[in-house]
Length: 265
Image (cartoon, rainbow, N blue to C red; front, top):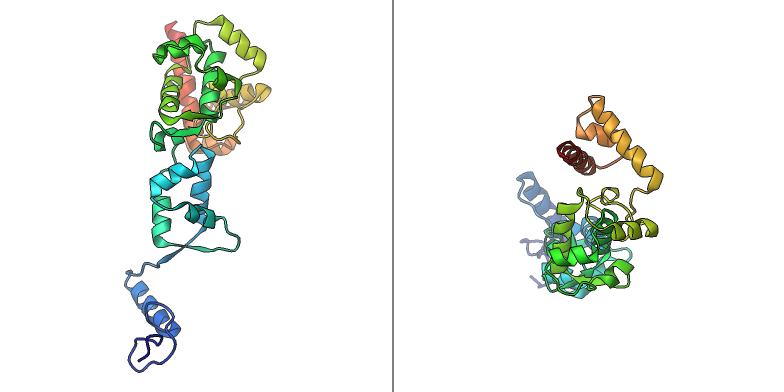
């Protein structure tokens, strides 16, 4: 038997895969599938491409993707190659094993990531009265002007560890009023959105947009109206408002928290 022939006894057809000709390989695959034991070495490319796009959208850079998967740079370049339909099972599993989380969660604290989400959080906090001096003090930063380039949008990157600190602070303060009228007035003048106008799932995505101006109040009012009508199922509310269930649930929690704060005041 030649090295290039099918390894099945009596078959001289050219080897196709796993040392078997096309016909015997097909039979072997069908048999394993029948017993539920077949795992192809190739996987469709669509899911890994979409996962990489999701991660890049929330600020995960190519270097972080390489660190998270152990895959070389050329592998990610090949994903976008026109006409390609398959990736190896190993590549598929390594990419799909990365959770869809913000870059500041996935990257090492010293790694530089896209600053879009951090800038949006800082500006939103300014809108409710927490300016640079208050933020830097709460983060234990001596230099009160440290975030100037972030507020202005000039700084395009930030260390993941610092972005995480700002994200945690944002979650703690977004429903409270800060002490700085100067920060609030400046933010209003510049048209910076309120914290509630950002969806937490997309705030780090450069392509995401806040719920703007007059569109924001009707959305919030419609959400409260449906809830008051006795429609409590999050999935049903999400369908009526054309929103993701997770976003609706988070907005309801925010409204409830804000209501509790007003009652306690």
